[in-house]
Length: 114
Image 1 (tube, rainbow, N blue to C red):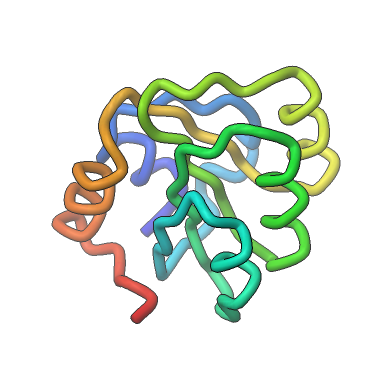
Image 2 (cartoon, rainbow, N blue to C red):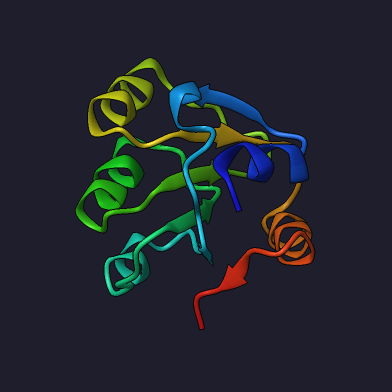
């Protein structure tokens, strides 16, 4: 699934990484616990989270996350956006819950990590 397709499936808004809308993402992992994210090892991974802070971007950078989807209307700060742009990580926000976002993306063909 492409990053652009993820955005469409959850009726999201691309905050940064418009140049990466054609990038492929194969798996998704949903968590607000960054310690759990650090244990995940996979390429082409979407992180679905409601934790909107700089630590989320830093964790994604360390874990080679391909894209981050922020759920529940979480706001992305300018510092988060800047760090994500520097790291080449597209950021998407949406208004739906983590549960619904995961369900919609699964229905659209994105694979669960486990």
